[in-house]
Length: 410
Image (cartoon, rainbow, N blue to C red; front, side, top):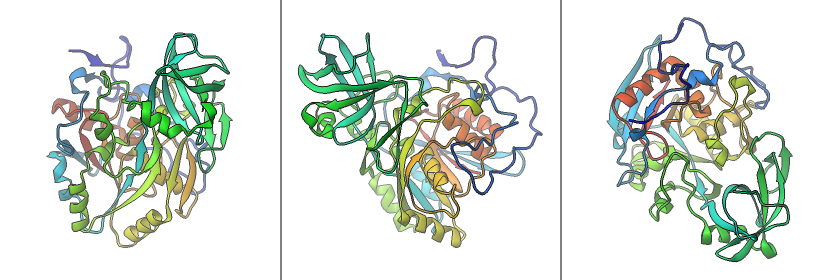
């Protein structure tokens, strides 16, 4: 059996192995007024290395396809108790309503995934693969390009023999836009070369993607995309086009379940976070404090802020559906009081972070040594997440984008 294991032969899996100590306290709580780009709560943390968030996963537990019927997934429910005790129960996803109460609020990400993978040709005849990072304007995209030799500035890229893009610029940089993602400012934050491509004759870029693009399945799904992925790698409530990866916790929901939530008195509100390809980028440094998060565009509308305030005033819970929602809401809460926010976030939530908005999280299982695994560890505690993942592997839950879900109640 093949394992996914990001440790070398001399290093044991720290997330799974017995900790050296569990008596040390978390680092100090987040100050009330901060800049999320520079705040670093993990200083002096006992879990400050990315290697502390590693684990081994049998290859056959990585879901390669969605369940045959949407929502026919398993649900692990984990609730923290006093001390290091974490109660874990195994359920079906359609039992989610049993753990929610009238007056609770679910916040979901309504971004819509673009068919962002395009197979193209250089004018010289060489093949290349374009993976859109984000749409910058009606006629330009920021993209990763995989080819034997990178295209040069000014070179034309063809799709099915038809010129479609011209290479406008190349830089080892990442785009940070302010407000709507069409006013680009270069920030030296990415190790990967990115390309700005402009459509030929200034034609609209979205129709080109919709005509020729493939769904950008994650790299751990080791198969070509299929027609079914156009529907299944998309949430039923997706509206705002712009993501190049799905907010996967939302994939489990059906229109029937959304109606059942409403009938029970559980409100659903939405944010938008356009998930970028950077969500799959590995952490390339040892210390978490040295890692630079990628930027993603978010919109947290006033209607959602008002719903959160009302929910809190009634003593009810705010449950985030997915880590993208956590990052969006906690970004909006950085400038107190919590208010509507539109712009960019590169918030990196890690040990010691003081969660100001969410009371629970519905999410999928995350990759070893990933920033999302760091996030859920910050919410539940490192030892609790280690225990949860051990249980999930033993019970053969399916992992990652098309896998099963867990409800985390700290």
